Length: 405
Image (cartoon, rainbow, N blue to C red; front, top):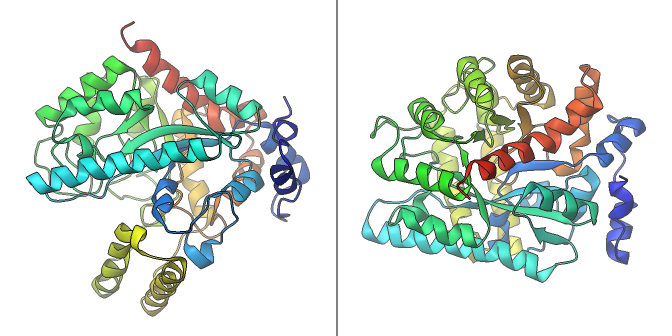
């Protein structure tokens, strides 16, 4: 199937598709192969940008100017067919007001994702199954699966998962960087020794609905318990290798093998802080904290204010420099995990628009560089097809097949 040819629907999309930026690091044959594949990412934080006044996913943006990494023109350049678009809710206080805020915030992001589909139905379409994804891509449109990162919107009532399911949710991540009412985080002090009672209820509910469970950001104890409790394979939607960089967010080889043994998939993350060991720099963190906090209020910032905020962040990083990983480092994680579990259990979940991206892989337009590196490492076209999308669709299908009918 010639997916690039199928994508030439409509004059605007045609012009975008016929003018990808040349990349000297990618051979023409590799680019042609990459464009033939179904390319999906399992963790797109791009819905955060939908809150920005004036930000338009149909227009080309610049990472340098506004920090964004995904838009339709760059998806076309990079051959990205879509993936899981994330309902991310910033962790908040575990109070009545905090639960109400989380509930409302989650539903507001869900509404923004659904609005994207309604606004541009000739460009984007909701996918509920693996078959949907293949059909949508074949029609030249972008695939919109919906996932949740941080189950705080469900903290007041885990039964709200049914509401999200009816609206299209097909992947559930239980926790983020701080422990919540559902589960212990990999980057916070343990409170529940794994899953809370609400967390166990959510695991069972997700299995019952056929929602794919995501163990990224979860503590090792949560990982072990979810793997033991789940009646379906499990995914790590954006996680890297602890053997390459010993960050608590990464998975050790034993757990990578356990995930694969149950039929699961690890989608490799490009979030720089997890890819190389970094020495703590309190002054840098103190200076960056209020700037990053402003990203929680993107709906209040106009484009000029966003650009100014980007410049402030860049100035702080220049004042307190840290090593920044590059494409070689990212590929070290990818190739290590491939060696441990094989190409049937690996994918890409780069954390775009959520902090992902490394030097040489700043936005989705550069995704063919990963294909070039995989081919250089000896992986076949079928291996690349598995890594770029088929493994992700297989594990989603397995979760749905395991649900009661």
